[in-house]
Length: 386
Length: 236
Image (cartoon, rainbow over all chains, first blue to last red; front, top):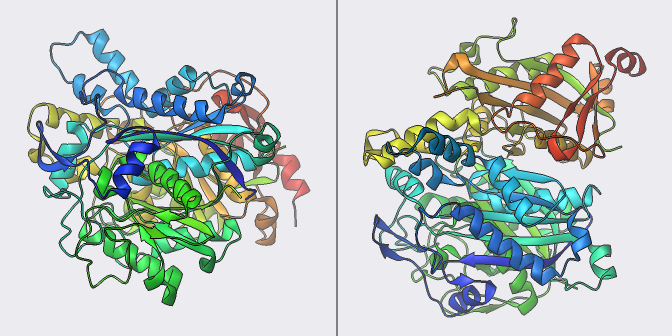
């Protein structure tokens, strides 16, 4: 795949707006997760100032704010917007609409409107319209890999010559819809998220949105846009084993990582660090560690690895896009943050994630991994600005 | 033109005569209606094209309204404070990719799997997967539940097996039709609730042996080229 430049990044996370508050929290080893009223039995992180899940169109608003930040940073000329597309990843989209339309007091017309708005395609088109994007609109829903797949699909659109620029990423909100579902699956840990830790017992839910502006590199250079990094490769693979659990041997994730490296024309030796999916569930982290061992072999114990969900919680469809954006920032800064929530490394895992203090990383590319319910696996290979 | 050289080597429409029974897949329990429809169609397409499942076979599916009934069930249970009364399986099906995942599990498809809740987008993604060599075969299509909770009788689904035209010829399987994507034509949007629609329309054209075009919203059109001409051109 021809390299695609990232010229703008916008995000909302449980630490606030933009990359900076998240970056500070990660390097300060802080978490946003805590128990909240209405979300019992686990820890959650919500975007500050926007806690009300029942606010109409909340998922769309999160996406719009992140998209506007990204477009602002990219300084994309207005005349380019007509051909710029949108690739929007989300798992359940406006699930709050789905809950509200159960209210028996609603008028039939209001209920019908809410049902119609609870649609992946409608959400994506509304965001595109509000951002004044006139290009292609692609909704994608590949579980927790949605944000990464949105970036990969957008890069493919540009590489194929169908769009000169794309806004791509993911958006998701914490609502009782997901909360009760994850509780029912027994996947939540009331004590927070502890990736790769011996005491890890489940995940915590976060929310947010992260969108990047991707462009043909030649266009970006021609208009002297800030180049924050590059999308070099994208790979996906299905476990084809279970709806709820990952492949215990991590084979699907390893195939996705190899596919992304192959597309990027890079070898595992050229990967300077990994941003892991690391949900903090016993099965996910073990499976991911085995996938990394399959890809990196004897090099794995020395390979710098970081993960974000101990700080942000699992932001569903937005999480992989947030992680990709942080990976790009790590490439620019030459260091990765410690894994928030990790104290006692599970000795059964071969990985050696950064613990309690940042770790310097050498030149090379970053590998960002994502897995999801249904055995969905995605990997992105990301490069620096050069 | 993007997408030139894409061959349709198999196709199917849910409800059409001649499809295998769901139980012929060797499963021992019923599945969600969209899963049953797409699994049967995928098996039919692979058999018709003379292909085996594996990591080089990708899925690009349009799914959304097919799971609306399950989303509603889960939302209703959460709203009424009784989520524990529902099987966790219902929650798992609130994300569209669960359908593709079950199809992958039932058929052993370990290649790329992308769920795009849009009737036309899977065709463009399929073209890219083939053009870039990420997949050798893509099963592309979608499913929709036409009304209310997803009953078996209300499911609509269609699937096409796409390969590079040269690959089908090498296997002595001349394409039955060719697909061409036209990114330049702007047209109206296909309705959200009919994710299967573009695939079903294309299958209809292939079955009728007539060329035509289906609008895919702002993505342009998917064109079915003349079957007869393609078959003659590509005869081994």
